[in-house]
Length: 115
Ligand SMILES: [Zn+2]
Ligand SMILES: [Zn+2]
Image (cartoon, rainbow, N blue to C red; front, side, top):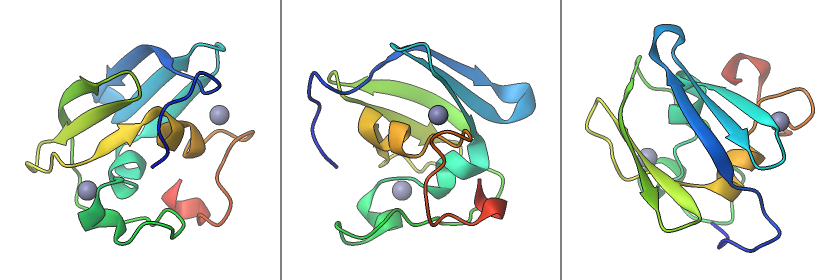
């Protein structure tokens, strides 16, 4: 993915709501992105999940996976570790913003049942 630039947004709060299987991210512009875990896992940005770069984000259906850890990567991304052991997904803030499932930002070309 693209690298961090000062023009992009970054999270000020990351809140894993395990009871509801979702991850809520509050951004520096006060926007809140509320990602169902299945959605977030489905759009894991790693090469194994997404294949060759340059293609639009691809949804990879998985079983009901949960987050076991979230680790910061520099100042541009976070690694999400899934309880399946899948830990190669480095979710850049750009990627997360791009995938924001809200009405305003919802990505084009992603079927409704995957949101
Ligand atoms: Zn992956
Ligand atoms: Zn949004």
